[in-house]
Length: 323
Image (cartoon, rainbow, N blue to C red; front, side, top):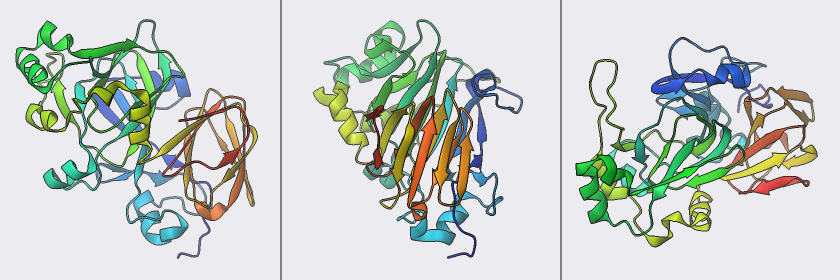
């Protein structure tokens, strides 16, 4: 235990330049971005590929990994922070990809977690789409053959659907998926950065090279079961790792933190968090980590607030959708 008390923790974003990224975080959230095509903003993360640093308060300058080690059970009841909250700006189509589960990734890599995730659609251009699974009935043999042929035969295997802001898509390990151009999402996921690309739209990078594909590993982990496109099945699998609740215009929502930390993400409008020793304000597009040591907090916002946690979120109020 350190002598500095915990409080609502906001972090400096970690921006990731991607071949498919863009600049929409500037217009949507008033962000000041580094140069380049920014595809991701890691906003609450403690991973070897990026660990956020506290932006303000007595713990300013600490990174989330240091906080986990220094505060232990007062922050999280695990040796490693288990979740990662990011924003994604798909200015071009992302690769068609799939993620492994815990058991597979621990056999193959040094990662501690597999990657199950969930998307909340923040913004979508007219006609924008995502890939969410394979079309019903596609077998491993058929998909493997289509992967090697590419083109129309491969696209015919993919479940492509148009999306609208406010929609939620659970993506458990094993579900083939991709964001299409013109979609911005908030993503809560396990603390992992392992991705197996199966198709990259025949795209070349800045040096004229194709990006690496991981067809063999992907075929090992893809969920070909009939249940894969069942939303209840996908939500149940996601809930083994995290929960998300969408709070719409919360006015006086009580957040009960004793069961574990929570991550709040404000969308559309600012959000106020009232706690025993003060008030913390989130700008639209900003996230914070609420340590369980805070006990109870009160949330107010005229917009949408995403409430993410390791276990079932604890709150009392109307105007929410539990996912």
